[in-house]
Length: 89
Image (cartoon, rainbow, N blue to C red; front, side, top):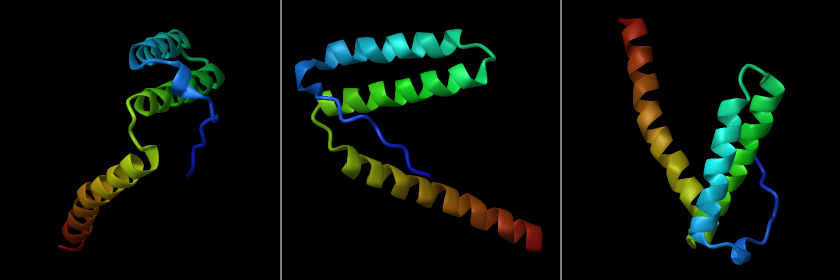
């Protein structure tokens, strides 16, 4: 799976302004209710806003994402191996 974000110029926003956008999108997601199309739209808006927040903080998204994936592979790799071993036992 790959999610792309729109290449918005975040240099015009402060971290505080971008966090406001994150909170706005989170509220819109909460209000989406059971409308799955709206839930998907607002979730992706929230991902975009969160990525923008990291960018305004000067965080390298690609490097941070790589570390995140490696952490999850370590964590879930152990869980999956343990599940396989208990299924064999």
